[in-house]
Image (tube, each protein chain N blue to C red):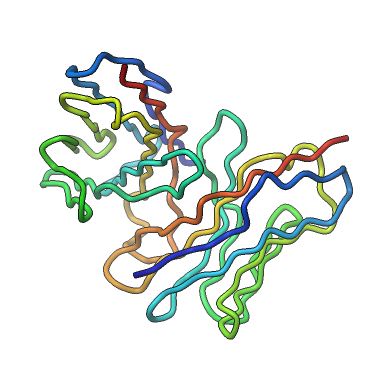
Length: 120
Length: 113
């Protein structure tokens, strides 16, 4: 089945540094990937939609200059948390929809295992 | 806006017990409804889905029926196993644009032998 690999699975960084999280579709092409954030005991919140070869679409309230998204190929999207602060500590999850499945609302999304970010 | 409300966990059951995890939603239009499961250390996986009112989604012994009149999509299983221990997320996909998901907070299920 379709596999989405997310790396790293956890990362600890110092306040003020930047952290890059990778999301790869291993056995399928994904023109669209989604980035979510999950706070403890909260829902997964959609942060942005990453489109291959174009700019990401950010949800309201998400700082695009802080959360840089690059979708440079059909199998890779990256999320960079710039100048991280402790309040950015969270669980980040990516998902991808397989190319060719069409943009139907019923097409399954394939999720990565998530990245636990801790900013000290 | 769209929202999904599901019961808080953890839900603790003995093996072979009956499971119900409640999920209600608020949405404009006619959303599709999903249950995702996240096993320990793994990503979210689609468990089942229903795309219109009165549809029943089923997989691996789990079932959920799309109830438009009560805006609900409760997850049920007649006899749970230890291997069902996981976090379950109810989600909806609205009609506008290409599909994104609105998730509930997730419900942890713990099944003991």
